[in-house]
Length: 120
Image (cartoon, rainbow, N blue to C red):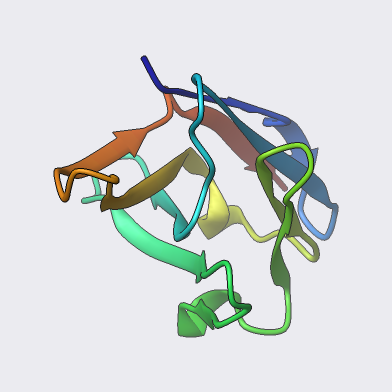
C-alpha cells in the first residue's frame, strides 16, 4: 500500500514563504515522476509543478520564479518551496505521482492535500 503524506501548509502573509513536503511510503516504492497541483476556493484543480527522476522540471507560468520543486531520493520525498506568496496562491495543495509499476500496471497516487492560506 503506497501512501503520499503531505505537510507544511499553513497560514502566511502575502510575500511570505512556505515549504511543502510530500513523503512516500510503501514497500519497494520509489517516486519517479512527481507533481504538485492545487485547488483554490471555487476553482478547479490546476497544475503547479512537476519533476522527473532525471531532473526534468516544469512549472506553471503563474509560479515561475517564485516556486521551486525538488526531491530527496534517499528520503523518497518531494518538496515545493513557495516564496513571495500571493493571495491567489491560497488553496489546497496536492502531491501526485503517476507511473507504471514493474508489472506494467499503471498507478496514480495522490496525497490528502495540505491547506495553504495567504492573507493580506
